[in-house]
Image 1 (tube, one colour):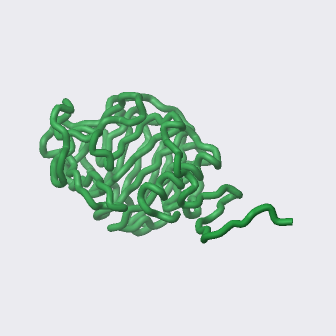
Image 2 (cartoon, helix red, strand yellow):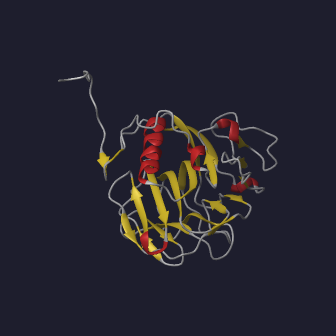
Length: 254
C-alpha cells in the first residue's frame, strides 16, 4: 500500500550508488571537510587590492593583490608585484566573479604549508588560452605537486606529483569543475563529474600554493578561476556533497 506521493521532476545522475543531484547539497558547507585551503574569488569580502589587505576589491576590473583563505588556516595568497596581480571580473560563471590571469606574469602565492598525500584539489577553472607547459598552479616550494596546461591531448591538463597524469580534453572559453585526487598509483583527474582518468601521478605532496604560475616564476597560464578548494581525501558521499555544492552555487547540473 502506498505511503505517500512524490510530485515534481527529479533530475541528476547517480554515480556508484551515490546521488549527485544538483540540489543534493543545499545546506552543505565545505568547512565540514576541514579543508587545507580555500580560495573563493566569488566572495568579495575575501579579496584585496594590496598584499597587506588594507584596500578591498570593490569593482570589476580592479587588481587582486591578496585573497583570504576561507579554510580558517590563515593560508592567504598574495603578491606584492603590481604588474603580477590578476584582475577581478564579474559575471564570469553562474553570474559570479572570478580572477583572470594574463598568462604573462600574474600570480598569487601563499606561504608554505606541507600536506602529504592523499588529498584532493577542486577547481572551478576556465582556460582562456593554452600554452603548452604553462602552470595553472604549483606548490610554493620545490618538489611539490602542480597543474599544467597541455596541447596534447588538445587543450588538456596534466597533474604532476613526481609523475605525470594527463586529463582528457578540457577545452577553452568555458568554466568547468576540475577534481584532482592525488593518491599515488590511485590518482585521478575528473572534469565536470565525468569519467575520471585514473593513473599514477607520483607521491609528492604540496607545500603551499602558487596560483597561475610556477613556484620559480615564469610559465604563467592565461586562465581564470572562480574557486579552489584543497581538501583531505573524500568519501563517495562527501564527493557527492561537493558536486552538489558546486551545482547549486554555479547553476550547473553535473
